[in-house]
Image (cartoon, rainbow, N blue to C red; front, top):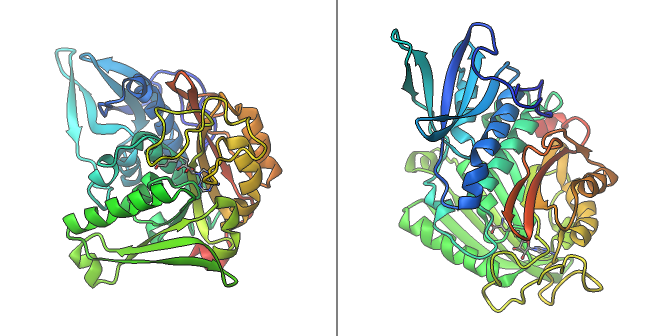
Length: 405
Ligand SMILES: C[S@@+](CC[C@H](N)C(=O)[O-])C[C@H]1O[C@@H](n2cnc3c(N)ncnc32)[C@H](O)[C@@H]1O
């Protein structure tokens, strides 16, 4: 498949080898993934991801999946060397384990020459991998979502990220269905500030307990502040605010990242968050089925088909059971929180809400749905009840000059 001009649809299978005249050839080793179902799809998903993120850089690149000595690789060909941006894109791709250049040897065989990749994570990745709980979003999928969202942001109208690398200004991410914070933690690792909204007190408590323990164990300079979340004098829920620096040098330089969690119904947080204050909204919507196993903490499992059931579609804890009613209620709140040119990236279960309905919903609420994934390249099976897909959309308009930093 060829990288399109921007974050658009892929163009179907293609040849990596020799497809670009005078091309150099590369092979990305796919990370071994413990989840066997996801492992089966990981090479294809990584190929689709690389088509989109490398294409967003505007360079022609051909991408395909190939077995080399029995191991899955995503092979690329592109003219000239991979520039810094492309190497960073490969390094942060969801299941990219290592990069090699493919060189022909005089005897006709081929050598894979290791190519160093830049370190892109600001924190140890056990921030993502230690927590294991029912309902956790697979961290590879979370990386895929965030990676595509950032690529779409960089592709956006001039000024989307100030036309400069994301580092020019700290990006702000919102996960309005945060669970125990997989997306928020990944955003921290990518150097962003992150805000999460989660209605379930059990999830918020477990998240806080883990994060505080982890920060102490890693001896990272941080502060934790918790209190009530109030709107016009009325208590809406709770607020947790963590400030952290990734290293002693960063702390000395005053480089502080903020992670906030609001325990509240996601459709009620409009008054506590500033309009246009987020660059990215990245989330994994409830699957509308009993996924994996019943949730811990005495919370009633949603039950198969619950996405359509009930007068409100919500359980006694206020959690939405499925994506349809939730999106109808929440999108009017979420969309204004994104700045103009900002990007929404969401995964959801297509068994309870088919893609055309998600697209229609997002468009009805004023978002411009991007072509990424419309060809099915990002869809994959999770289990019998869940078939997950990813969608990307942008809030139309240019970023105001002040926000573009
Ligand atoms: C698929 S899970 C997200 C999991 C998360 N990415 C993680 O890895 O922990 C969806 C989350 O949405 C939360 N949720 C459902 N309805 C909500 C609502 N109305 N307001 C806020 N959170 C809600 C659920 O409690 C659940 O934690």
